Image (cartoon, rainbow, N blue to C red; front, side, top):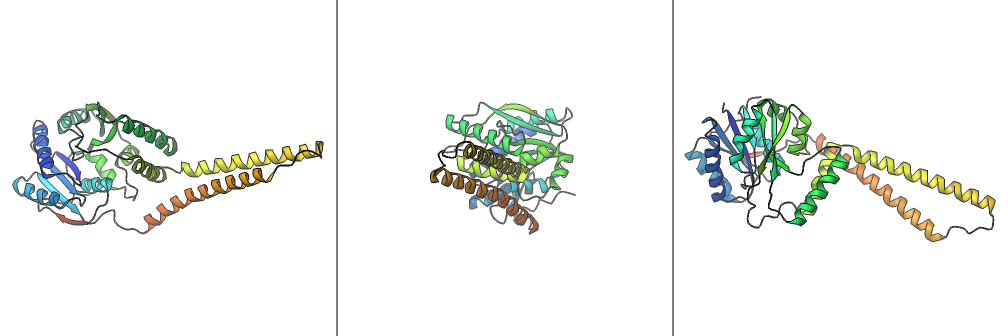
Length: 315
């Protein structure tokens, strides 16, 4: 039972990058304890990733690996890693070195003050103004529609107590968002600030459309606020139409020769009503689709291979 587990989802990182990650993690964690493990979860990226993990685990017993049957996505890969993490404390971090391993001792020290969950607020992040604007817009819309308070400075880089990890394992919904689930769990949470690592060459982060899709998944997966919004819009439309109808009736009674509303206003009202109705039906459809996915009862992920030194964590 290691004292610290480091869970690292991997997709298309190079062998050199993963080798550098192991070196820096070893150096950072050695000052805390010699009893730790690094769990790489291969989310079926390039073929060289798994070859490197197998080779590294054969030379270093602290390095362990799990290969998923196909690409299930980053947050499912994190879940798979947490399912196999046995440490008293579990660190979740990205594999591209944007999450600096040198911050792990600071995370651990903060957690030892009595916290179960500690996230990292990324400062001095080297991104373009367009990316920063997109990120701010994304989180504002997300927070408004989901009813949550997601921090734009935070990603997945964090440390969890064993109690938190056990609670996380019990939550198997298919809409996976690591940060959202962890924050929902509760317990004592806080954050520390740390300088962001250098971006990978050619890295552009999430595009606007990927962020929009992620936002929809999170809003539907973690909140029913869209349904309430559609109800509110419907109530507003009904109230407006009643008020307009009342005005037209009174105007006609007071001024029988008054100007009648033309066909353009009628068509505009019909199109507006039809559009809002279809949008509301779409909201309902999103929730029904999520229910359909849940009731299938399929596992969150399937594994293809695992290194010989990796075992599932005790329940």
